Image (cartoon, rainbow, N blue to C red):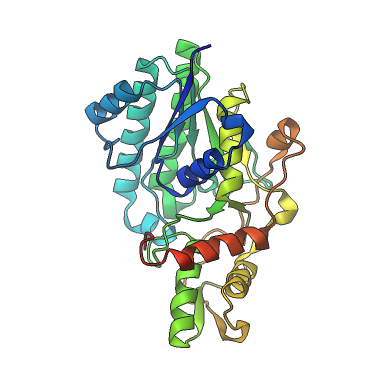
Length: 319
């Protein structure tokens, strides 16, 4: 049997590093499989020729497509043109080059934020095109919706099994800890560290009331590896802990503060800042029907591992 070669785009980012951790820690699914982690230094995936050269060099049998131009709420509101145009380019180039190389399995990552703004909860995979996304991130959202359409088109036209996976809010080591442009959990970790050093309050943007489901990057990595090498379906998959594990931003902030030994009486909420969507509860029923016994890392334990990594690697992490 030919060697399985899995090319991971965006391989040095949050989820790519989670996959690398699973490989290094001898996840049984990875046995006998070669993983190639591609970074933006190896190829600019917005450029078709550079993308093609990377695929020709590594000759993958499978692709995990994580590369994207991403950012939190405020960056999405500021940069709609770049968010849309660059993500469309990246996705078209990666899927085209995967097809040219004869890759039968390409798993592309999207996000729960690409779903319709007005939607019934819990959100299920097949409701992705049921209405427009939240206006704050429509550039990114429409680009990511198109990778789902393009994957299906390749399957219908060429007999591939390309699909999309949709994680909820991801956190873990190797995140982007930018306070301006990062996501909520890493941004809070950074603000918490600075507030602790200065003896100041930790100010959380918004009311703290919005609800989110968080997934630890190493758990997500396990699910993505499984979706690539074990699952053989073509249906999109929500990769998320169970609905009852949804928490408020206030609980997130309290957990981060606790893990970083920050005094809880110095935690304050700035209600003049936007909250974004109040909730995005998703159903992981499809995942659970296929992997009923998968155990997610408890939130506090995962957050402690994440904050410890951030503090230990503060000087060199993305921020």
